[in-house]
Amino acid sequence: MIKQNVQDIINKQIQAEMYSAYLYLGMAVWCNDQNLNGAAQWFKLQAKEEMAHAMRFYKFLEETNSQIVLKAIDPPPAKWGNLLNVFEDAYKHEQKVTGMIYEIVNLANKEGDHATASMCKWFVDEQVEEEAQTLEIVNQIKMLGDSKGSLFMLDRQLGKRE
Image (cartoon, rainbow, N blue to C red; front, side):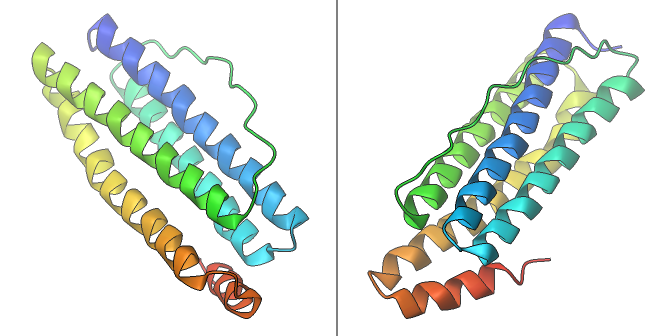
């Protein structure tokens, strides 16, 4: 079993990952409402990935005979001004999650908790990928300017994510 303070921060991370899934589902709803079905599909897949992240932390607590405490999840925002705003918010959120992962790693190292530090390495690497892919989309949207045709093409490309 891992120390209580490490259990607490991992339980908080489970909640954060579940909120991430909820946030991305909210973004998918907004995109669908704007007829940006490709972006909606991208966010639905992102939500699914975040649920898998939550379950990865859950399983770790389970395997270490630690206490799992499920916390309430706040509702996500429901409106954005445009697709750029949506992806900028997604990018900021990923940066926040990265910071939270680093907090877990720092605490695990401070506590000499090698199991938690090792488990978190996967998340550190994953967050590099998450931030990079989201920032790439932000930058692509910025390059589009006001071109509806280019937005249409980007939306189709986003919908091809598997």
